[in-house]
Image (tube, rainbow, N blue to C red):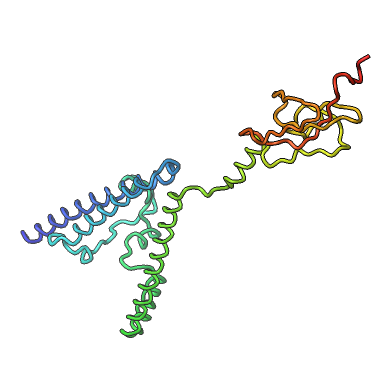
Length: 271
């Protein structure tokens, strides 16, 4: 009798330890599922890793409890239902947290089952039979092929990660040509590269589209041509019968516009 009492106490202590570990594991799973369903928008990857690490540690602890030398073999224990009733059992509801309201003939085969479902058991037997048919050499070749595929996949994943990291550190691709930009700025600011020549039949001064031209004075026949250069705000010397070239001045482009200048004594509006 003392041996039987000792075994019963040992069984009760093992069951209490097992229930405690299972309760902790259930709480951790419930908390993690709640985060996934309600806090997914602000859930971070380090937090997910922490939850997985906690679950892994609790599973390892549960396995240690089951493999402990003082833990009896639960598979040798037999559970026999003493009372089956279709009525609602409040104590059963409380102990199962509302999952099992009644302990009837419908739920007993599922909750007290010690073997898998017949369909699952048949599939397991089929897999075991197929595995036994494969020889040692064929199994070794399949293992090597699977390892090779996994290695290639890991190599591709590592390559993609390295390319992604290098792409993030690489500067943005240049979308303009500096030479074209400098030429455009020089053309707008200084008229570099623009042709200012105007044909003899063109209209008078003030015509749009003539950048960098000097002041043009309309004249009559028999007038002499003087080449003028510079901006409109700069007054250039006007000498009758003299062609002025501004090529020697730095920062200014020579103008190719021919300007007709009438002498002051022959002004058309002078009376």
